[in-house]
Image (tube, rainbow, N blue to C red; front, side):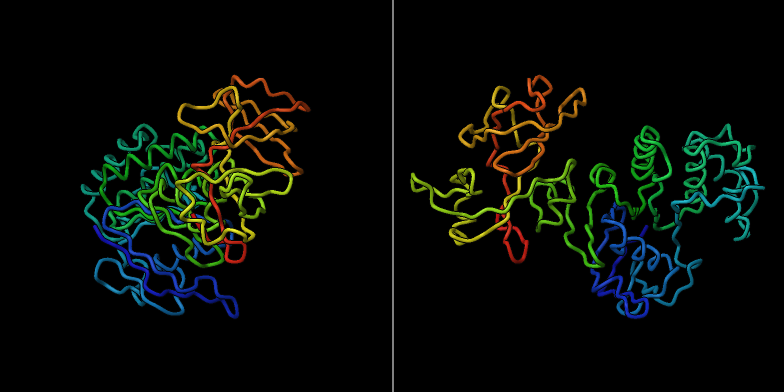
Length: 368
């Protein structure tokens, strides 16, 4: 059991700085997800913690111990990689037991731990097989089992589900979440998939270009993104963004003016944006906050209306993704499956302005 701390950590490869002043406090037994696009530094942060990369500046602590100069084998961590990294000539049992044998663990203890992990991961019946006789999902469970038997203070996982198909990803996602609840150990998980991050993490650290953008709970990231990058990265489909100007409408209220049309800013958001009236901003609204006028959820103000033209329909059964064009701008809405939207036809869209976001045009930081 251990907490993990990144304190002013930098990592440089020659002239390129991959991690820039990274500060994260990870609590004991927390499930923290590092998420961001390819090249943002999330895997490097994990490898620095594991001791596979040497940091350039700063400190990394596991518990109260600074581990900057501690060899990987002495850091009390276990890592699950994107590739399964199983020994093809060994059985599942021997793959899981290999690390314990190197540590001269008693044979009876090895047997107990391997069989216990096999039962936990539902691969006990596969212990005599070689990796080539296993499916991708089964191999990933063996890799998880190899980490579990070590009883580490911290589990590190580097995109462990990326090689699995969609259905297996969902199943293994649930398996890893159950493991965390059962083992009560600190998990640090790297992924580029924001759905994995939202469904698994106690907290999520969103990274871009080696810089931590926001660290918060999944719901807080979704509801209150600190900037446009976080707002666009969290949520699927991603948030719709438009250039707009905050102005006074004909009735004296504040509106978001898009040129071809305007949307009224609700009273409960006026205080947040009052200093930006007359300025150019970015307006953001999530697809799930756009509604067909015939199927508006109860409690949503219907005053923010737009006439749009449907360009693409993506029916998903429980919802429909509708791509529309309004005033020369394109957006996507997650509409009720009962919508009668048709490609090439007009549709009246209601925007739930209580859920809108306004960002500064220069800094791209949130104003709301």
